Image (tube, rainbow, N blue to C red):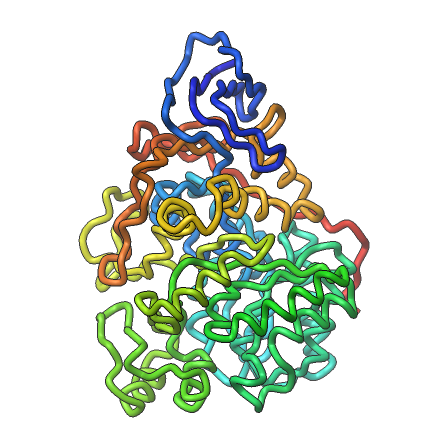
Length: 495
């Protein structure tokens, strides 16, 4: 063994192991978890700490080094871009590999960006900004001809062949797209043996004009195609109608539909101001006012509909924070908790890239200089989940919250991505992606005013056996992150 973490409370969410024990690590693997002391000259005393699998974020748009460092201090060891995705994925993997990453990384292919490339001539790129700047352009949301659809699907297939972890479907940003196309994308995912990750259309009782109810569409596609349909941020797309969605999910899952869900612990989201669901008329149907929207780059709280239209026209890709639930209101807070506590649901951040008012600093700069702007979920999702769901309110046990942050996300992927079978666990043979945190101190610090304040309480974080956080400080030269790649199980075609 190269290292022993000695005397901590070790929690393995898969086996239910929860005892004071030593954890032995050799290279990039855990080789022993023992209630008896393990012999090794390199011992790190973690008495009084919790030792568990590193957290896996299925929904992290902030993929650069600064964003990953914020997530490392929040307990994350694997950060994946699955809902929006990217294309071509080989470019994204190559860029991350060349630059180095502190955390493990991976990408789904992007249905939205593939459509943008085909229908409006958008330039593909590995950053979320390649998508954000076109989200409000109606040109990519129109019906595709059969030839266009074939080319879109060929791009998705090529990305899957290059290791994409599934298909990200931002159909909520193109709510009038033909539902048959959605089912066809799910069919491709089913053939390839990979999940889809969907930002749902609006619920039909929010927007009677959508061609299909957003929750029903995801469930129906799972039933018709057999594809694993992952329902992204069910808290934000359901908001005050979470009970309706939970009821639909309960029925579908009881009948065996392969549907999984995720949520994040905030009553506000972040997206491009040009998004279809931020159109003034759409806002009225969602009980959201222009004043519930804040422009990230300037801090401006939008005064009225006229100003909203001006900003949407001037820069439709500008990031905003959208408050859809009032976390200080007990009724709204209960809606949020009901989303987070859905049985078998994962915690996922929906972390967004940092916004800089001026030129960004070099990517390895740390601490971050003043001025960086971002939604607090980019820095505090997992510590806030531990604080609120376990320590303060006792909604879930400590082991249950850890499972939602580690094992359950791994299980979403593991049928399609064999490497994930070694993550989200803490036992002999698992990857040495290990989190050590102080259960009394772990908490988020990021706020809507200062979204880049790192969480505290993460004492050590190892990625592939290397310290990324040691003694509560980042190891700045440590870049042990590795690519997580898919492998299509069947020979799919784009026909």
